[in-house]
Length: 193
Image 1: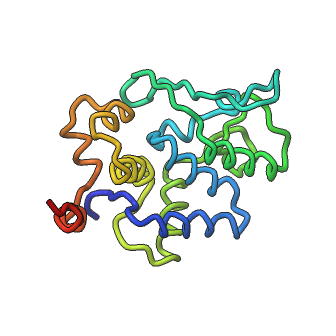
Image 2: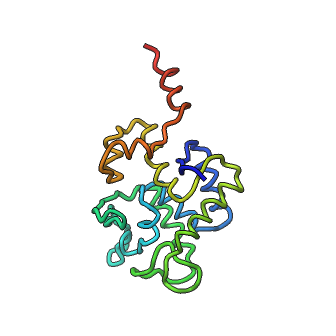
Image 3: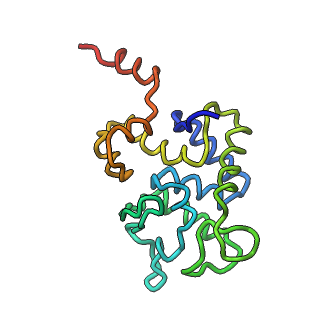
């Protein structure tokens, strides 16, 4: 099976977004976009409720998501960027039932207020990757890794990515970035001293 990889190619990311969007799979689209843009572990992502991202009293999205990470019990504050807000808006506007503050955002379709199971999230990601012939060992954790990889490619220092991930060491973050030979080659060919 191997180590989960980030999605390195931005075109592949767009293909996956379009795969869900054009099929009207709003929950899956939002799951993918929010996962990419918040760097949350799937266990934290699936437990999100609308009241954590939307102020029902004043009718607007919160600027920040405040969360205690399930795995580490560390607190995290994540800004909700415009892609996250748009994904939530798409999901909300296409939700058949009334959205309530206590509802899970990524609800199971079984009718109850339960989040989808992580095994279902795994299938959602794997299905798109397979149908689109995207190479690599891509799964739920790839969303989190993709955030770091794409941030690193845009010049964000690894120490900041480490802080965002709430990692205890830079060594762990470097593993997440999954730097490969192509990445090293780009440094050598692009750095003409």
